[in-house]
Length: 286
Image (spheres, rainbow, N blue to C red):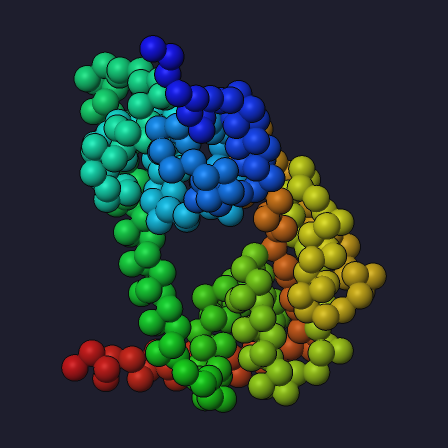
């Protein structure tokens, strides 16, 4: 007995219609209603191999985690390492990366070295953060710099870094040499507080022969606010080939020498101010 023709007898024709609708952007429900296909198995066969349109895909909250897990796996991370970083289950990780090659096994000693390096990098990061917080807190403690604060700081700074008179070599000159731009700026602010006119200042760079001499002169000229042509002749320091210099690189700009013209009287006052501070110091020890 012959079977009665069914509504799906022209399967290929029906599939062609379903594929056309799918590629036009229709959803499964829309295709089912349009073609009157109520059987899900038949609908699956009609749409076999045809991806759903983009608009029908629901956003997955784990897509970012999956992509990151695959990235870490390609970097050679183990399931345990990926789990620690992403906080997701090993079963999910296994599902996401199962098509990727397994990382090459390292020797136990190499694994131990890698783990030790990771721990040390973590410790260094913690130390750097602690160091940064301490410095920021200390900076905030300074507050506004009063004239007396600047005066006392300048006296101590000059006596530490400036030229000094000797009983065997009477040179009562005010000459200051330093390589730290912050120190130079504080020193110039101190001279301003003392009423020293900028016109009395002479500048000179002291630098090693192998450095960028012209670049250093431009840097210091910009810092102190004068034209580079106003600088005196540069003092070149000859390098001893047997000495390993550490002050090299793009940040090395030598030292700036600042001389105050007609500074004998000022020098004598500086020495007196310093002795006054030293005289008071023992009282603070009690």
